[in-house]
Image 1 (spheres, one colour):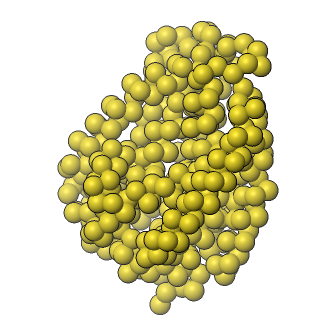
Image 2: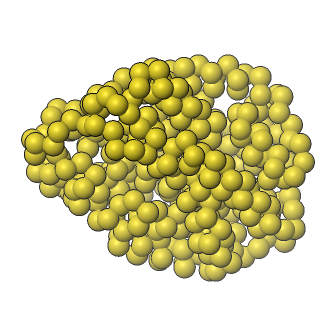
Length: 355
């Protein structure tokens, strides 16, 4: 029997699992598991590629304050790229995708076991362990925070009526947006879970005008607040309008990508470019840290004066390698290597890996 707190059914998951608007699940989907939702893989890939340029400096300096370009109060051209496109945009996207993934997994696990929350708790426990280990290399990492938030916020919320995470998510996101960082994440986690429990993705798919209206509202709101951010662009992540604009831009970006995925040709292109990164997001996120650290050791990054442009150069070197690696790996295997380990620990039994 379906638990009342997890109204997303396996049928609904299948309806949303689209590589394009054709609605067909990808080949090689293991029996007994919900098909992947290609749009979410695309969004994960975009978030992964977009967050690396702004994370490179923190990873390369191992949490220490490496010398940076002196602050003069004047914005450089690169500050506009970082502040308007990447900074404060990708972290909220990861957060809402985490809430969506949590709720989708809980719904899917409910069709395989009578105790889906126990399985989910084990999944989050493994994520916490990986996060603590990752913290030793990258002190600014967030995986451990995500795991703890899943256990203390999302898991209890899954027992409550679905309107509770929706209302709490909206309220906490609105309250946390001006502050950003950890203050923003709980609300977005809850909003992501509410999106699944209200079948919002299905509603957008079935009602194009609702989708277009939602995107237009988000885009206009994001553009309006971004105009205020322009006066403070040199402040970077310390700009309050910038933090708010980041959240609104994230919603506009996500809704815009979902709109583009309605077109079969565009869906194929977006899937080809971003889905391989997104399907192996866990592996790619962690290996990016190792690659940046290796490069930092080679060039003695903590001792050099850091320019924002360096983050983009490093990302441009790493992301194509990860994309090619992901494409080759996924030709032969169902999951990325760390995704497979995570899945095996989650179910406490070896999972099929080869296609």
